Structure formats: structure tokens, C-alpha cells
Image (cartoon, rainbow, N blue to C red; front, side, top):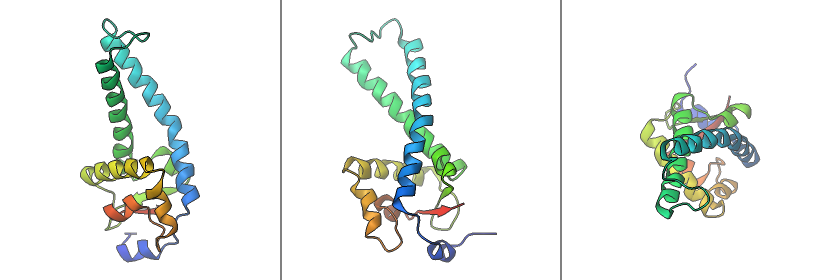
Length: 149
């Protein structure tokens, strides 16, 4: 059964609490990825990286590395499966305008906009309370919808 834009819009909107529950659930696999990523970092830079007295440049590069890992987790999950582990646990799926999975460029754009939504004290998420379709700001801008599985 193919999902069209009309049938996506007709689906009951996803409550905001369910989105936050999925986001909280996604923290756990991210912690595991961050541990593995930091371990790889230490293996590569063990001769020049001192955890007790880190060089500011290496510290910023480590933060950037962990950011890339986080972005990869969300972008790969959204483009290959249509949902992250947390979204699957809460039976949510992210689809594009046509009801299909998103492409990489759109997923990267949505990830950056979702970070901005969080950075503004969650204002981009709170926007869903005032939106008729209960879409967050970044979903509205990217033309994506959260649906139930």
C-alpha cells in the first residue's frame, strides 16, 4: 500500500510527548555510539591526546567528531529505515512530502533544523502545539511528517 500526501495529512497527528519519548529513547544508542567514537579517538590520538590536560584544538575536534557521529545516526536512520531506534520503539516513522523516505540532503537539513529547534529551548518543538497538523517547525520547513507505524 503506497502512502500519499493526502493520506498522510488525514492521519491523526502524533502527540508531542511521543516525539520527546522517542528522542529520550534515542539517547541510549547515542551514548553507546559516543563511547565507541571516543574510544576510536583515543586509539588514533593516544600519543598526543591527554585527557587530564586536553589541547583545546583537539578537544574541539573531539566534539566535532562526536557531532558527526550523532548526525550520522539520525541521517542514516531516517534515510534507510525511516525511523531511529527510539522512533521504532514508539512506533513512529518519518516520511517526506510524497510519503516516501527522505533523501540524504533533506535528512541533513532536517537534522540541522532540529538542532536549532532544540537550541532555542525547544521552541521548534513547542511550535507543534500551535500547528494544525501538529508538525514541528523543522518538519514544516522540510515538508516531512511523523506518522504511526
